[in-house]
Length: 152
Image (tube, rainbow, N blue to C red):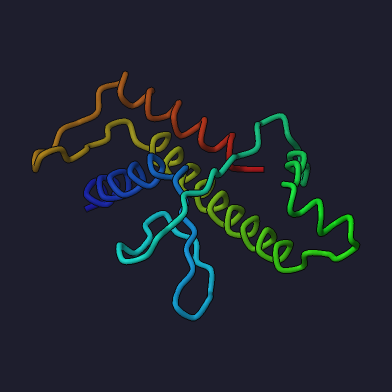
């Protein structure tokens, strides 16, 4: 039973990590903005460029702000703050942080599973097989990279 649980855990975590970089933003009929890795098929979702911090970045250091476009420059020069854009940018950052935290936890759980078990089974095309030591090491390296990119 314990082995079956481990198989399910590995099978569930692997696709999540592979899809971790794709985040979409869309607005529903009520005007609410949503973020997801899988947007509904009936809406026009905008892919977002989610960038993770490098391992050298500590604490709350952020990447430099992007240059404003010409329309925003005009608004800023006239002294009118664009609060709606600022609030949307803040919501975007919060959504990205939630995704990063989820990716961090997923990577930690996968690494824990890899460390605690000498043999791991995977299911491919309806058949179960054990991971080779090389495959296990490759997964460990990939999860370690995801952990370094997403955990503070």
